[in-house]
Length: 282
Image (cartoon, rainbow, N blue to C red; front, side):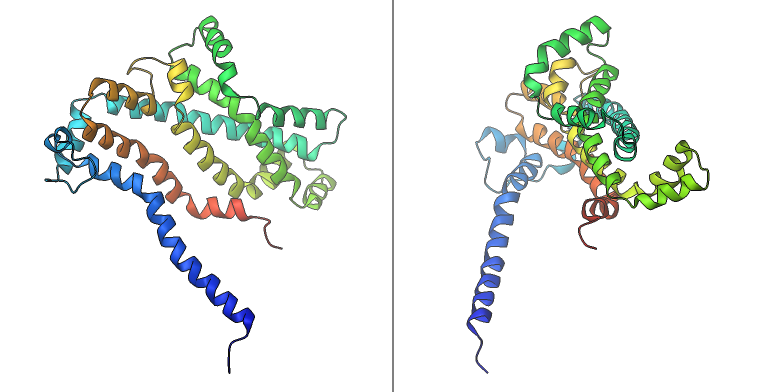
């Protein structure tokens, strides 16, 4: 039996996908592969201009040992964890409560307050650079990881509230009504009824916020200085200035800096995908 025109078209589309997907994957991975290869090159390769060719020698242990022994990258990593973990906990905790209030309770100003949270996400961070820096100076938290984490929590709570409010809005409201009929307090409804159902959304949001805050460069350079408080993104830039030609060490530091968010994603992959796809099908 001969294939129909629809089947022929479907076969051509499938072949097109099979050809285009590997090409797109290679193009996407090419910069990462280049950085990975540079991180194991010798200094001689860099000085000779061998940036894209095959390394003459593989200095995996030497380069990655040097980045920890000859630079303060360990302190930069510790600073990133100090900033990122409190930000994730604070932003997610606040958004769970604000999202619950905006999704469950009906009051006159609920919609304007929700729009206020949404509008804050459209304000460019660049125009806030000077007032936020001046505010940190007046508060005495400039060049501290606590101040950086505090302002990250403030900036991320708007998006997190939008995420959580929409998620809670899609939950079956009958569960909350049944708990109220049984005389359960609002706090216990939030803690024992709604919060367990929010675990996939919390996991997905935690991964997103962790990745965003870990990779933040703008506020890390605006609000912190020096190795004592700067996170890894700003620290890598300082290493770049310190070693003008040691791109192999800078590349090794970049690979080290990328490992925590990658590990976070794979550890939370199951919950992350469940949180993003929850409600996609009925």
